Length: 162
Ligand code: HEC
Image (tube, rainbow, N blue to C red; front, side, top):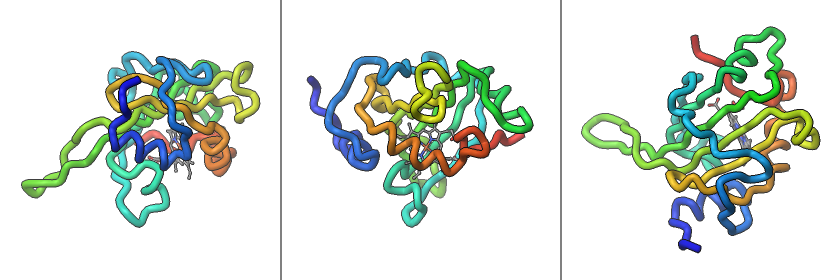
């Protein structure tokens, strides 16, 4: 096994992950092939001092597949089976009076499937190594526990920016 890079180790630490790189899927959630061509939901830069900093400090973009877009636009907001949402986490690089996108730190995924993921609010949770596409072992309950805070919007925190 390749030695994980420092950034990955830090990220794994942040997620309370046990050391270990799995295959291209984890807990039944597959790498979201082609997500860069999906709908961009929103972006955010999480800086030091923000409650999410330890977990996902950096620049992230959120992407939704077409089923997830149905969920973002539904009222009340309920996501259909097969909805996949990607949290694409990049290193922000500051310089020349600009913030630009640096290397990818992780590809973080939620997939709606009430049959397979009933125990975690009908959503599967997974984290993939930056550009390596390999799944990182996570404690899905830690994801679920925090995402319960968005239970009234089907466990999804973000909203689509029109
Ligand atoms: C401490 C709380 C917390 C934990 C723990 C957490 N998240 Fe999130 N997550 C958030 C918040 C807040 C957002 C919304 C960010 C935004 O609006 O840009 C979010 C957004 C997401 C999104 C985009 C969909 C959405 O809900 O907006 C995915 C995918 C995601 N998280 C996956 C995970 C996974 C996988 C884990 C576990 C490894 C995890 N999260 C752990 C708080 C958390």
